[in-house]
Length: 551
Image 1 (cartoon, rainbow, N blue to C red):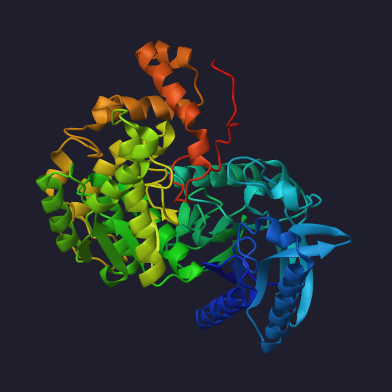
Image 2 (cartoon, rainbow, N blue to C red):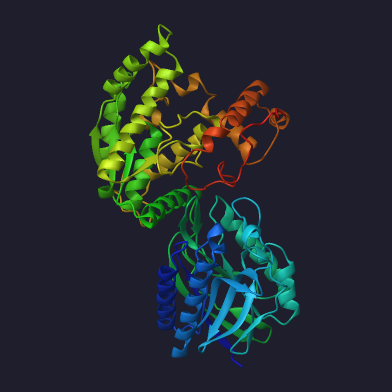
């Protein structure tokens, strides 16, 4: 029986479906853990498959590939160690489980299955997995180790079962997505489980971007004394070994390195960088294309893209119409030069004139209205997609959450693109992020230090510039008011009456509610984007398009 156990926490960035690549990642992590003197490696949840695998995990061929990868890693452990607690899909007795498989000395020495399958927010585990039975601990080197998986530690029952059946240490594999404020929530749940069980608690989280979700890592260890003993970096792959020691009162973890906690704006920026970088790289695009308007949204999008991918992989286009101001032309150029990205101008007036001539026999003498405004936006969308098709690079669209929520966006126009960095970022937060980025170069950024968003972009009134002297405030409430109401309607799920009771003008609330509901059909056709808040309106707020409720 050992009195010391060194465990490597493998905070990895798997790619969903890339079993061979994920296998190589786990092997590299295991090699690094051996160098660190670890006896055991713990991966994040479903590290071999990638998380979320969604319906891909139901394919028998994919299940076979995952099983073969487990067998390969099992054979690897004949080399003398370290052993491996591996996250993988696992089929047994005609049921498919979200599993941890224990591999040691060339054998599968144990398996445990996730019990509490989340089915809310971005999670849909009940669709594809069967819940496992209440688990006891796995035994490794004489130590009784509980491996509750992710959601299993958000309520007390599973850990209580492990504790009552002799568990001594808790190693918790996770695929916990990023959202603002979630780090503190994870630690709170960890402390609660430590208080209830008296056992030290190691939380191993995935890192990386997968479609609209970003996993932020930030794996940590809480000692039996309820103190933070170690913490891995956020938004980075890392393999770190911690040491557990047996004492007179049971097991605890020795103090290790504690990575600094990120502030809110920095964490949002890092999430946007990682989400875009992994989406572009994992889908195989060589570069990105962005319409640069001289406004704040496209400026921030270009800055994030340059920081995530490097300025040399970012192409920007200014596409002026007759209504584009000289200030916008100057600001777009200044922004591109500050960020260091390629900048070109393609005027859309010829396309506007061509559409006007083409449609005049149908429209007659009807006055100009939103139709002509949308034609401008769609001409820009066609231009960006043409550049993407001909020259390569994925179009990154630039609409923020405030605009997407109320439909202040044009289908097949400014909504054109393969990905949207700002999809879950409110307009007021866009301004805050620009100000933050002008003062900070994010850790790991490939872009330039210093100011990247010119001051005039931050101070001029927001405008789509689709007609003379147009301002966003002509059509929408001021953004601080709009965003506060939207947070109430979306994240807090409040009614108009409840928001009015908090002091918001009832007519304004009703108007925003109508805009929100009427834009559902647009959001269904919008590109994916990075989840930042507690409720991204594409995946976590699923309302019917045809909807007669007006409560």
